Length: 383
Image (tube, rainbow, N blue to C red; front, side):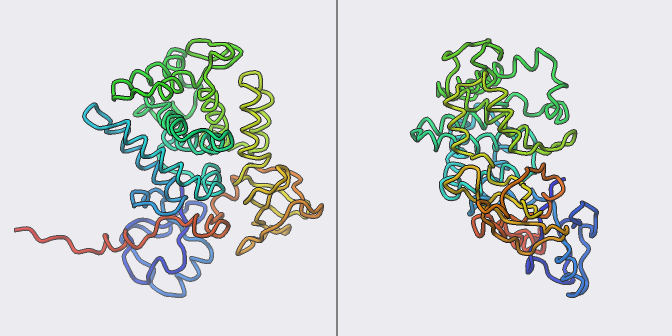
């Protein structure tokens, strides 16, 4: 279960709750329909951290870059569940791709941080949206034209379309796939997209080839070298990166610095070196949202790029003595005393990071007021 922190002023005293509330660790504090009876109790709970299930709000019309990414997950879940020949599937997916492009152009830092710091929704769909977000960053670094960008992002969003509806646990743990299922899913995915009316050749090819490797070790066709389209390789790289930094039931997320090393160096023979260089240019050595340890003992989150890929801006979250900073403190990492000395997996801190405290209005989550008003609206009287 992924949680969203309640902000001051979002809840009232003595009002019935439309959903359960939890502590930061996921302990149930209030059931649906119950309420917080005093202002002092509410103030104390907000200070400690009061949370709701994150994706209950994602159906709302998005306004901020963060909301656009979260809404994309909700929208793709609904679209994939109801996809049929009667709907204009290609146009719907393209609209989501355009929304993610808009979010990235408005605030690329928030979009990449969302990939690492936000969870919720179906793993298959969330992973595809994350892959599209990372692809958007690399395409921007490559100065890709708008039409091809749209096609590649649409391919990322639908690369695993044939896995929709499978048992989530089996999809999350690739070891549970049979060899036939593993090898066939790009082919069946492309065939499904054609049935739904997709005729974009770049989109279809990228879905078919997103597990191909230039050394011939990929699938389903075992293509070599330049026979693997650049767009396909890009989605493959973004797919690997996002899978490794995702927190899942059976494994902790890996730290992003090690993921980049593994994906771009140890796996370098699988992808074109130029594409790997664009990947580093887009994400930096320490991608936005990465958790790091500073030389002074503070734990921080990477928040902004600088002209040095190895010395980004960070926001310190935790002091050397283990207490949390509220609000987080912005630091430079070029000085030796606040330089980055290690990277962290981040599981212990994800629940305590309020993205709006770091990236401002562009990282505001969906408001709770519309949900509260709908909950309190009296039912219509029928005769």
